[in-house]
Structure formats: structure tokens, C-alpha cells
Length: 611
Image (cartoon, rainbow, N blue to C red; front, side, top):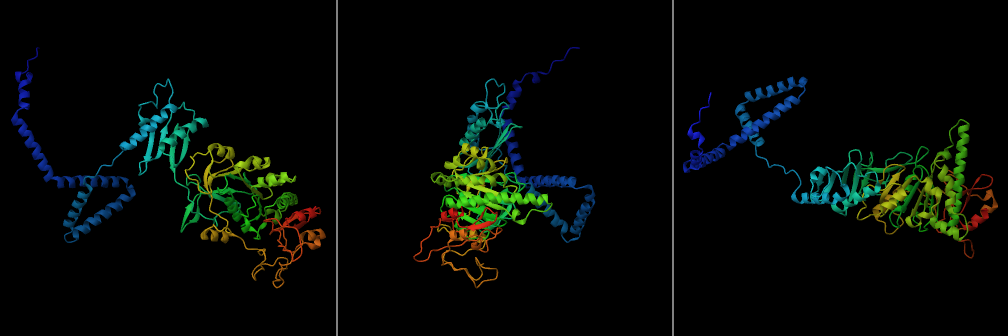
């Protein structure tokens, strides 16, 4: 059956075109548009209220769907009770209607749409960063390159964030699977490009995810420098080296910084018989806070143990510890350091033997072998120079036994030195100090040489004192800020820091030079309770002669637990004697041939008289 032809008016479009462009139709369109706009203005409140009621209804349905079934009955009863109360209250329905209309108007108001995506300046910054990474993350022959000149940077950058000033704050980027992310050289090259393009002057942390082929760049806040020396809430055997980033450790300690108390993430170093890194090595440039760290460690160690200090620099930075309870000696001269370290070596052997005999007998180790002993050596290489010039033993030689067997004998060794003289450290010091700290400005190669791994952060623009990196054994490298522990005897120390450090110092067991002990201080050389018989410090005591005379000339009150007592000798008028060493004012314990401890002073004459 043949198709019937369409009417001419439908096949010929010319009349329709003339009707579309006619003046009457244009006026009709304009009139309809004006009427719609007027109606929209008139009914805009109703439209807003309706939109709000629709949103409130959707929220109510969602709330009802989220409510557990066992709680829907009480909820319905509560809503019904509220409706009944409103109905019974005078003018209640009218007020309820007004309230619902107001809520609908507020919920249906037009809101300013949130701006999503980066701004134009941020887009240009991301595009420039993408173009800078193209030569390093692209390869010839890649059929679908992730990085290409003029490519789509949104494919490579999964997440990004900017701060208020428009600087990049966080960036998560993808890289191709063929990129050699297991090589440090390739990683460092990418990190340098990101550091330069993201903006210098800030610290960045790079987190590599080899499994997902992603790299995350994060801007790090500066570590707090307002934390001073104080009593930290730690267990015996735990020492706070400093503080680090919150997401680097899973522990916080309450600290006082300035005038407020807050929680800070610490770097805790554990020592003792079960420690895998019982000894510590600190390296840094002069004035970067190595002595401050050692002073902080000494103050924490004095809570539960005894401390021996070797000050190789001879500047008296540890003068505040002289004569304090638990401080067995503070030596800065070669003779005193040799005698002190020799005693420490013999003491380590004695502890091992005593503990072994006690275990073989089926008993507990003696109390004097379980009290921790800390050997703190600041710049021992300076004394090694003097030992070579005087053809005497290297003081580091006597650290070999405490370093090798100190963990079992509760003996901990802490050594601090400078980068320039680090090569003079002995092999036992390098081999047995598994806990490492680097302070001050240092390159990635220097940090890697000391810690065994490069830092995952960029160096800061300005390095405050006590700022560096720490690594405990095979753990990750952490940023570190040492608590401020200055010398309280220094005139440049502020009042707040001086009072903080002084509050941590133990009580005096030896009076100061030329001063008599007060009523409340223990009497050196006297018996317990004999307060009236005080020692005359103005009279010279010939320590060399006392040692030569034998055990009868020993100083009473020198006990192994609390450390050897100290005797201050001042020559009488017209009498000459040996010159004392700079800081060697405290006596030491030395084991004689019979195995009995003897108290000697750190002068050269005393050491020669001792044999």
C-alpha cells in the first residue's frame, strides 16, 4: 500500500520560519518571560518555604531511617506527646505553624555555593610542579605516560592542599611503576625538585609508599623550643632525649612549656639489661646543644643512679654537678679522667663477677650491682690528644669494658663529640653506641654516616640550639628538639631556666670551696649524728700522703653506693703543695691490689703515689 503524501504546510518550512521570526510571536515571548519573572518575585517566599519544608522532610525521613527499630516506638510516642501539648496550649497550633514556616524559610534559603578546586594561582603552581617532574618521572616508549609535557596534572596529583597564603601544604602524587623508588639517589632527586618548587624555608616530610606508587609531601610545623628541664613522667630505665612530631611516636608526656601544661610526644631512650641500644653517641657542631643534652641526661640519671662525668673540653660546663649526691666525680684533666675511667672499668668487672656468683648461688644480685652507673664523656677526643702528647694511655681505652659488658652490669655510657674529631673516636665507641643523635646543621650525607639512614625531612632554614635528629637502633630517623638545660652557673642563663635546672639538682654532700657546711648539711668525714664536729676546710689535707700511709688514712664516709666523698684541700700559709686540676675537686674510688676500694684525689701526684 503506497504512503500518502504529507500536507504542504508540514513539508515546506518556509511558513514556519516566517511565523518564528514574526513580530507578534517575539512580543508574546517577551510578555511570557516578564510574567514568569514577576510571578517568581511574587511567589519567591512560598518557593523558599516549600524548598525548606522539602529539605526538612528529607532530613526527618533520614533520621527516622537511621533510628533503630527498637527505638522508633518511644520516638513516635515522644513526637505524638509534643503534638498533643501544642494542640492543647492556647494559640499553640498557630504558633506551631509560624514556627514551621520560619524553619522552612531558614532551611530553604539560597546558600552560597562552596568553591571547590584550586584557584587560578594554585592551578598554575600545580601545573608548574607537574612540568618540573616530567623529566624525572617519564620514559620513552611509554604508551600512556602519566607525566608528559602539556599533560593532565590532575591524573598525577591525587590530593593537594594549600594554606591561607596560597603555599602548598600537602601533596600526594602518583608515579609510574617503572620509577626506581628503591634507590636513594632517585628519591633524593625527586625530593630536591619538590623542595625547590613547593617553597624553601620550610621543613617537608616525604613519605614513600612503594606498594601504591605514591609519594606524600607534608609541611611540618617547627618543634617547640619552650620546653625546659623538668621532671618527666617516665619509668626507671627511661630517659627523655627530647621531643619530636606527634605522628612519629605513639606516646605523649605532660610537660610545662611557658605558662601552660600540655602533652608533647617524647623521644624516649630505654637503658638497662633488656635494652637493645644501651649506649648513646651524640655528634654535632660546636654550640648546637650537645652539652645541654648530656646535662639533661645526667639530671634524669641522678634520680635512680650514680653519674661519672668526663669533661674533655675543660670549660667547667658540669660544675653544677660537683659535690652533689650521686655524682661520683667530675673530671676535666687527663690524670683524673684516666683514674676515673679505670675505676669504672674495674667496677664493671666487679659487678659482672658479683652478679654471676649470686646467680650461681641461686640468689638475687647484690643491691650495689643493680644501681645504674652512668659514664658521661663529653669530648673524650680532646683528652686523647693530650694523652698522645704526654705518651700516656688513651682515656677511650678504659671505655671498652663498660661499652661491651655495661648492659649486663647496669652501666651506661654516653659519649658526645664534634664532627671534626669524630674520626678519632675509638672502634668500641663506634661499634657499641647503637643509639645516635645528630645536633645542629648537617647535610643528608653526614646524618646518614652517623645514624645509618638519611632523614626523611628537609633541613630547616634556621636551626635553634638542641635541634637535630635521633635514631634508636634500627628505628626510623626522628626529628629531635632537646629540652633547654643550660648551665645554671653561667651568667647568661635566664632566671627561669636557672631555677628549673637548680630544682632538679640533688642536695650537696660536699661544701663549696672555702665554705663551712650549714646546719642541715651532712658532715664530711664525721659520723652520722655528729653535727658539732665539723671538718676544718681551711686546713690542707695532703691526699697523696694519706694514700701512701695506707688504709688508716682513708676518708670516712666514702661509700660505694653514694659515691666517694670529696675533700677540698687548701694550702696553709708558707706551705707549697701540688696544684689541683681544674674541675677535679671531687674524690674518686679506686680499687687497689687487695680488691678494696680507696678514695684518692685526681691530682697527678696522687696518681703517681697510687702506683
